[in-house]
Length: 412
Ligand SMILES: *[C@@H]1O[C@H](CO)[C@@H](O)[C@H](O)[C@H]1NC(C)=O
Ligand SMILES: *[C@@H]1O[C@H](CO)[C@@H](O)[C@H](O)[C@H]1NC(C)=O
Ligand SMILES: *[C@@H]1O[C@H](CO)[C@@H](O)[C@H](O)[C@H]1NC(C)=O
Ligand SMILES: CC(=O)N[C@H]1CO[C@H](CO)[C@@H](O)[C@@H]1O
Image (cartoon, rainbow, N blue to C red; front, side, top):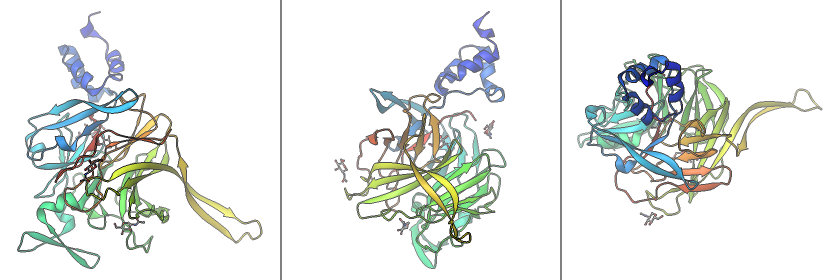
């Protein structure tokens, strides 16, 4: 049989062992393979997922080029390797900041109309979301700043800084017309939701019915496909679940603040995700002793799994029963690794994915302050087997720049 006549099932099977880059190479071998692979999405071809890093020092806002670094392992250490570059992207990227999302999508955001878009750099498909100005409702001051009211106070922000200080993270459920995007935004890190084709954002669940801590704020959100709900965690470790309309809010875990959450020398960031049906919380401990705005460094990441309400009733009196939920430490992610940062948190299986170590948490940049455009250069991995931290990039002082983020290329 001629190579060009290989049955589709065999091509499909081969593709599942290839990286996306090799799959693209395969598609240009001959017209018949090209035809098959162009219709790839319909046939359900899947290549190996490979995490890429969009490095902040490769990002230039006034540029129509996007370049990603691949990850590999050399002598047991994770390193960044080949550069994958996409050029001539024009208005898809020009003047826009990137946020990670999922399944090959980036969220891009410009400064002037604050209108986020989902963009897939591989397929160049782009989907617009409503402008975040529909949410913020700013008042313009004569000096070019804007006034935003927040819990009875007013803040003044230069309009140019709004995007980089005020918008923290986007989490998407799916890319079809029923897809919902949640944004974490504002000084007090609140939630809002939009359907991909909606004209406006609507406010998400509020903390007030569940907690009286006014200093509480949302830190991360994840989406659970099976029960079609979002789960949001606050910096007091409280978890709320809500449906695709932001309704039917359920308190999953009450406040359980870590007393050391924010000390002079350390602060903690929570991330949340589901792995094999279990709700996991990652607590990233960041050392700020170097006392510099862009040198805060990750020292450890603790993973816990959520054990829902256990009802205990005392044997002496049946009326005295108490219920409690718990976070139980976990030091085994099986063959998986997790990726956290300015991104939707995600997990990859090390045998299914290319170039990653198992049982690790890969982390990327974060911000330890609210200064516009200052991010701590802090990219590396934490190995849960031996609590070893490896930094992939060395901290370097930077002036205004955008954070590095994880990305998994995909055709979907
Ligand atoms: C949560 O964040 C707020 C605002 O940054 C801060 O004032 C508060 O101390 C944090 N709470 C905890 C438990 O870290
Ligand atoms: C950041 O840390 C590096 C080494 O860890 C050091 O060389 C550099 O001077 C520090 N920069 C600042 C601004 O503190
Ligand atoms: C959304 O994702 C699905 C697969 O998850 C894909 O088939 C579809 O083409 C995507 N839609 C767009 C507009 O990219
Ligand atoms: C930019 C980026 O890192 N995006 C990743 C964030 O998380 C999703 C999974 O939810 C990955 O698929 C993305 O590639």
